[in-house]
Image (cartoon, rainbow, N blue to C red; front, side, top):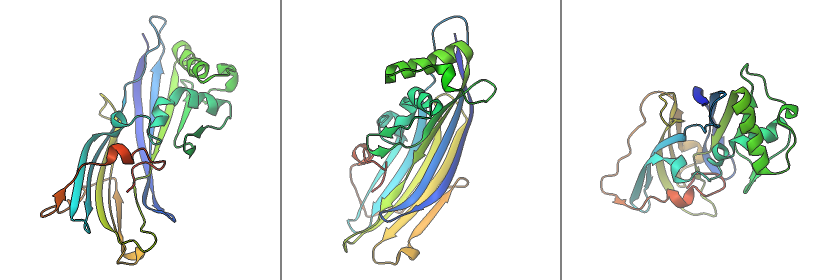
Length: 242
């Protein structure tokens, strides 16, 4: 029976400050090695663990909400998380130089297939297949017969929507990432603290993203706790933004 090994989980981040959003591009790249076996069927890898802690304060409403858990298991088909479930046929498309467009437009993240020596697997080695199911099976069959490495990159955009049309907004959020694979201690960690206040110039807004140290706490004393909206908000094209 084949076996998966987590080779690495690496992350990088860049500030996100476009016309509508204020936050971060957070990229987590997983490299998983499959060791082939002549016995047994193909083995699926363990599930992704995308653990987050969120505290969100709305100062104008006098409310807050919080969340702690695995966002992948909560919404595995979200635009951010979907690349994990799409890992095989996305790797097939990459090998064939074919684009992939998600339900909301440009696909987020990537999946690439390498051989056991770290060289990209060519289209010729996978063959040509017309359907998604056949493309999935072509990559699985290659891994089962030869072993190899899957590189899966998840691209998240934790951000707050900028106030528009003169709408007042004063919100603050702390978000803590702990990303890896279930059952593995190899993790990519980071935390974000952002505050958007329409009464201030954007240059005075708070932005801090770090991969070391402890995230600050947010004061919630005197605020009313409301329901966590993340099951709905994570369906947005850009992921978890408010």
